Length: 95
Image (cartoon, rainbow, N blue to C red; front, side, top):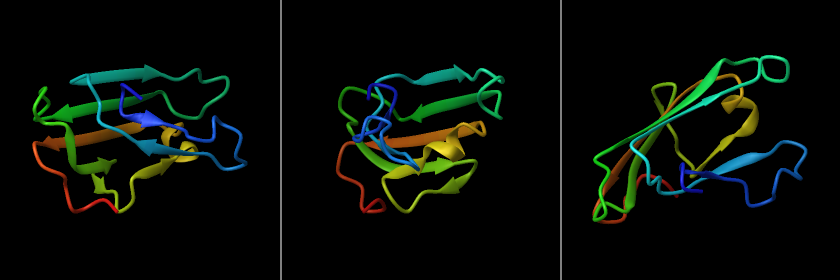
């Protein structure tokens, strides 16, 4: 969860979804094994990250804002960029 992603079902779902959490890192790159996944890497960037900015204001995957606090595992393993914007009050965009 410290990278901003967590699967509450532990990968047991047929179509897993990763729930969003507040990342503690400014930047994380996960290199995917091309033998198993189609993408090269997943890049997670956290903007306005600090010990006071605990709340997610906005999350975008591949430049498109997410409307729900989750992203499909299948989309993630295609590779791409997940960008968090943090703030000091709860955000209203993710439900």
